[in-house]
Length: 88
Image (cartoon, rainbow, N blue to C red; front, side, top):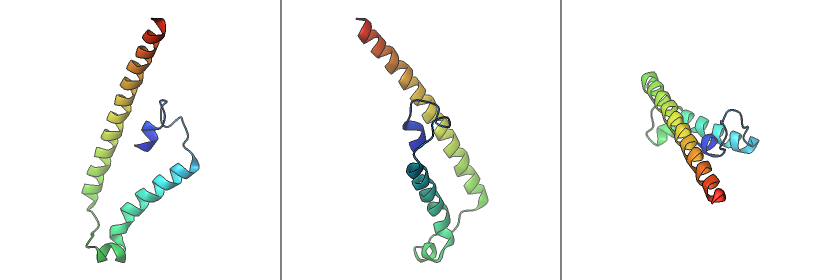
């Protein structure tokens, strides 16, 4: 999500700062791997079945698509509003 809302451009054409990318990848990797570690077991975490992981991945893709479309609509209407304000 942070890669979508950080720019009004298409997110895969606008490269994020390396620290932002590294932080996001690290957080996602830790969240994925934690249930498979002894620390995860200490908290009662168990690894998710593959079907759940696939379902979550599909929902994340759908969510990111909706966020991108919403951002584009917002940018379109905001650009029109600013143009009308300058024309008046």
